[in-house]
Length: 87
Image (cartoon, rainbow, N blue to C red):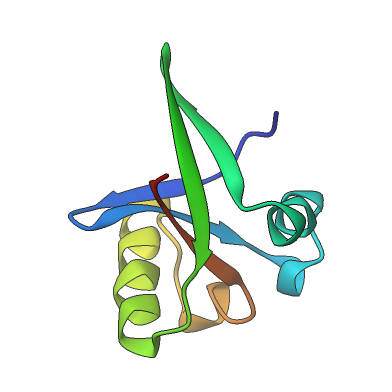
């Protein structure tokens, strides 16, 4: 169980993993993309999918910047971005 920053958008829930994928969470997801997400007291069984589409990455990055009050584009450079979707 880890606490992560995430952003809900119309097409799914997104998690960004910094350190170029070196975080423990990103390494575990690379081995097994089946994840559970708990929001409040609700638990969701999901699949993590790496987002590579640049247009989608930019839209999610903007939403992250707004939600977490990030300043410059440098705040979202070398992150791996995952979309959590239904299994």
